[in-house]
Image: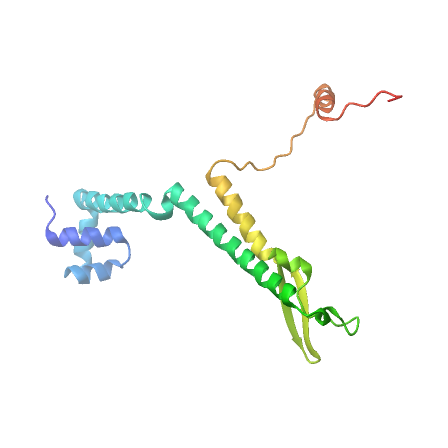
Length: 194
């Protein structure tokens, strides 16, 4: 049986897997039972699979399905995060360098300096402001979420390239093997008198 235009349309819609059988039947102006019968037909089922295979092939040959594209995307994301850190460091450096000397003077032990700390020049230290009844409290801390994201990107890139090896514990049960391993790994003791 050669598929009709309506069957071809139905096969494409079935392969797309975005509509219910009832919606496909309505679009093709057929009954649900007719679609059900077509789905049992080997030629129709083969055509549905051809559409799905073509779609899979198209997906696998574009975008992040290609390793090089995933690596390029990871590199770009890492580069952009690095730019954020660099820009932040420059902004804080400019604030520190242009601050008047009296900005470093603190009136009481509870007052925070009015300029960023020297560590802010790195760009990985961020300002956190909390507004309280008494005023605002400024704290400075390492931007751990940003650093964690960068480490995740680096790990994913290394995994993609086959350069990542999970740490594994090695258990040596044989005492002779343990002694041999210790001799090779531990530093040799220095003779007395050296």
